Length: 450
Image: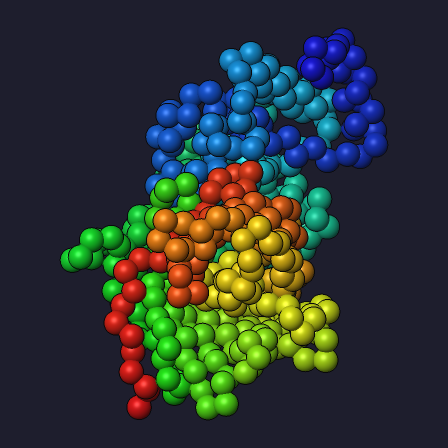
């Protein structure tokens, strides 16, 4: 609709005013180019960087499911191609007027793949009229100038940070040569191309997931240590498979221990594909009344934190890849700890199991996170579940609808609990896809530790 009102005869004046105002323009041409190309999704799947993406990321970029592109018609995609063409004309006009440009890609958008898309953007800058030197400068010296960091990085000079790329071929003759990497100097450390390639190969292998087990499925815990039980009597144990839109993404195995006096500990391990942790551990402490008292998390030994409930507050302390973090929010006595994990869903299932058919309950809680997700920062955040019990299933299982309110918005879903009160499955439905946690064949119940 906006493009229908664009008057290119006014472009020169807009560009002149932009330059006069000292505006820096990060035009992100590759974002509009790839969004317009979503109409031919299969071709985008052949991009060289795709094999390094997680199945979840790829699923959110499927135009049939993406909240950005779902329901778009051929006419809509034609308009997107027109927008991409206008973006290129605008970039050319800004450059010709001497307005300041910055190299950027906006990697959260479909098929704008970190590391790979920057080379595509360089080529688009040249197509828009910049020389290869000007395009490269927009991502180096000009970027440093924009950030007032000219004395830190952006140029090759004594005293500046030693971030360099050694390439085969002259990028000033052909900007595509910037992608022919012989090696990288990162803060003074030399990383040869072979080492970089090995790291990428490992990333592709991790994205592909673990091999199949002898009994079927995926062997997510093939190299994981045993569960670190705490010495209680194991009352129940199980393994849960995790998937996104039908694609396996990980698994969690857990055990519920009962201690003298009725205190319980839920111990769990979760394995998955990057960018999430390859192996995470969790320990949830519940007092004799079933109230949450402490949640301890560790992800790949790089990020760890503990949330404790006391004095009407949830207190979080953690170390996230060397950075200390503290946080706190109010927490009621009946609130649960949540981590979007089978282990933290068990207390929620216990509350739901007490509902009569047709009854609804709201369970409030504290979401604990060790890594940023979207706009949500690490720490503790409010979360709530509105749960309604439906008619029981054919085998006496309890079924529920729920609405989950999180800092990222609302998700609806369904939960199933078996006739013994144990969680069977839970499905989250968000705008970008469906996440499922489902119990597989439980392993044998463990004996008392020691």
